[in-house]
Amino acid sequence: GENVEQHPSTLSVQEGDSAVIKCTYSDSASNYFPWYKQELGKGPQLIIDIRSNVGEKKDQRIAVTLNKTAKHFSLHITETQPEDSAVYFCAATIPRGFQKLVFGTGTRLLVSP
Amino acid sequence: GAVVSQHPSWVICKSGTSVKIECRSLDFQATTMFWYRQFPKQSLMLMATSNEGSKATYEQGVEKDKFLINHASLTLSTLTVTSAHPEDSSFYICSAREQTQETQYFGPGTRLLVL
Image (cartoon, rainbow over all chains, first blue to last red; front, top):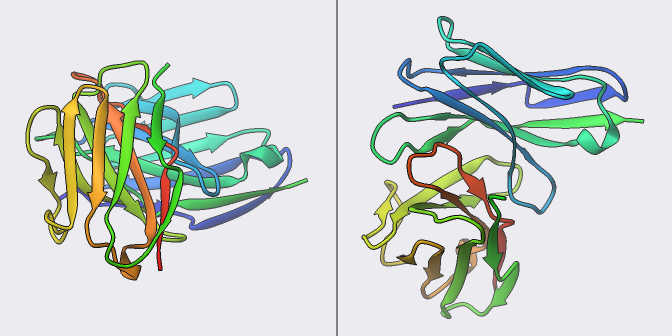
């Protein structure tokens, strides 16, 4: 079955720096890759997603890149702000049946002022 | 758009009682809803998938008689934790997805504490 690995598990940056979180997946048929931000005590919030027919997508300070050949995708946050501090999860869709999401283990991002 | 609500946001109950958690899609019709469980500092663990009008499909190791799921309408799914025990204490999160769409939108979660 699909397996998603995520690195790093924790990431500390200074305000204004960039942050990069990387994920790899195992099922080459996976075709949808969302990223979620989860603040303490809250549900995950979709921040950006990418489909397998696209190599890069950007939304203001957030961008996601996808390398299908290598089966990895990354989240890039530029000009980080303290309010970006949260846990970020990558996920990949199993392209069969109910199209369930398989989540990575999460990255705890801390942005220091 | 794409708002999912959960009720209650937190609940404390005595061991042996049953607890019902509601998940609603507020501005779209959710043909599929998912129920997850999350332990502190861990990722989301899928418990079951429910499609409107049909029985839920449970993940391996999840007791279907313990965690009853009903998806009676296109905007409402419920999770009932039956005869709850302290080990059932956790953060329960639902998500909803429109037909033909890949994106899952998550609710705010329900924190359950069983004493």
